Length: 403
Image (cartoon, rainbow, N blue to C red; front, side):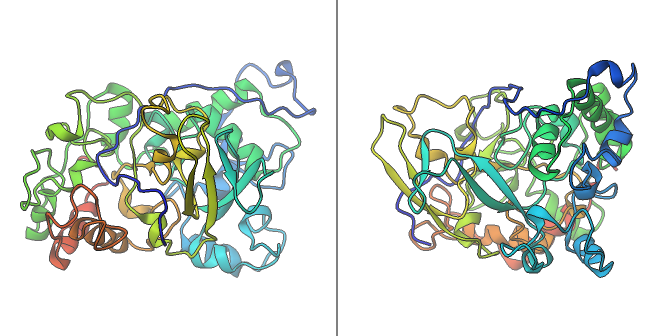
């Protein structure tokens, strides 16, 4: 895919201001005094439909992985139940009947309001846009991440729950603040939402999990890619930690000065690693027009512009960094429990853990001039081999927690 606006590929740390609240309002709102003094977060998560299409939080966030993979989708399809709450609305193909996309990629149609600086060339009057994304796992993140969703639009667990109820339940009953609080507290405390006891202890006590040492030679070699260490190409030591560092393995490497200012930034980290350029699921490519009324108008060809769709990030003033710069940046996910949460990337473009790691062979092995996925700052300075990929995958299999 040709890019008409160049985007930096690595070394981008975006601090998001934490906020909550929504302007969405439905007429059928349950009065607080009807709900009782004690709300059952488990029941609200597992069974409550809010008068919608039959979906619940559990429909797309399984007890086993916090998300749903292709095997989960196929299991639902094999039930041959046309009324299944999952296989309706945004899970179906554009014809409202077919199951090709969900069966092949496991992605859901997500409809997002367009912020004032963004429009579509083929539909200039549009106020919202649909993109196709995988479901972020609820393992570890509700209690331990400051922002949620691939593009960071949800800055609290309550906001994420409300957004999902509005966008995927087709609800007719509005969740109350108390119900959203109960759902959030359930996700922050229930063991199923943690990939290991070590992660649950981290949420409860602040004692961070440690990288397991590894047992096999492959695991021990794989660990070297994730240690916090100054990055000195052509050495590959710590290369994965450039983005997957810190207690949650989703921060920039604090040991590498050019990627941090000496202290962990507030908020979540976002990066552009060329996943939308690969566009493995072959999602529709749109022409996005970025006009912040300060910088020159920018045109971007992409299936999904990520962080640019978040209406509230505390980014630098647009005259310092144009808003178009944030197109293609997506949230860096935690690696704890990653072996259980396939497919990977915001578009489910990597079906296996090895596919996900192999993507970075293009990212690191080539410059942007040699390959559109190549890293502008690091491309060609290191070379990940197939053996490196195997070692990294072997180590990632261990990251259920501090073992």
